[in-house]
Length: 481
Image (cartoon, rainbow, N blue to C red; front, side):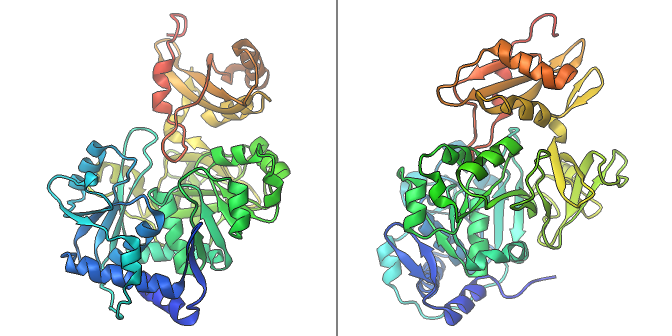
């Protein structure tokens, strides 16, 4: 069912009802909803003059977050498709994405980001665009937002969302209406872009932090941030800050990877009790949220968000009772139904009107969801199933370990063997043998056969650990293979 209004109409409603309410806040500028609407109208007129018509697919290479948000909303109003060709992506990746979605134009602040075979649109300087008092311009229907998956396994799928699907996902975040939202991840990342749009839909305030290093606590306090959304890595760093407790009244949201109970407890002790841990997927948006008072040793991701239906099933797709571990499948308003140009992967992940994210977990009797890890990451040692998350939780419970990543190595004798890499807290000292002993005490046969200590685990641009880059670091012994 198509939802109305679209984002342009929704923005117009906010500008009409609360024209002076802050829509965008930066270190130097505040834009009201009236200001934002005028910028989007000016952007819409400009893109139309550049030949952008409904159905055109445009690439955005803009690391200025306000420019990116305005361009996103302007292209949605123009009825154009769009995909982020991030400034941190390689030229080869940008070219490959452009080819896959049949890109016709690239919008960037510099011609250094031209893509062969596409028309280049130079974004006007912000002060020029903002000075234009555009007349009201009607929006065009049919906008599409192409989002690429994060690619922690090396594969990359593309999801083509219609504007009404993003709107449907926005309804699960109505609480943004009263928030001043700061996300540390750039709007060039899928998750940040989507949550910035959710915030606009709800009529909240998007707060943008400068790219240069700025103290998170000081910036949040100076700009009255009420909701701080950061990765687990940044949350752990924040907990170690000397002034972190000054954010005690702020909502802190995190997710994107498992957040163990020890990490949650540290955040609540050192930063704020208002901790929220979410479970989400590119293909459908928010799924579940663990709220204050719901954090425990099982590291639950909380109860399902409104209108999300989720089941735990076995290998034959039979529904399992509460407490039983199995594969997660779900459906929700605004969910994708296929991947763009990937029929085989679509058939694997989208079946019988359900989406299978590839995660393993269980539903508790109280309705809370526990996610144990990726189905594809499951380690099978002599027929024994081992979730990497259980190894990581044990290693991260050691006082010297900041973060751990477990994975499998192929073994001719055992099928697979578990191994792990760890990153230590600053100035922490521990030996591999001590970590192995700690793991064996808690995991017995499930303990990793090898552990390596690294100065820093490899991460992608969103802070997720890239296990595929860890595997070459391990050279199994003859006894292991």
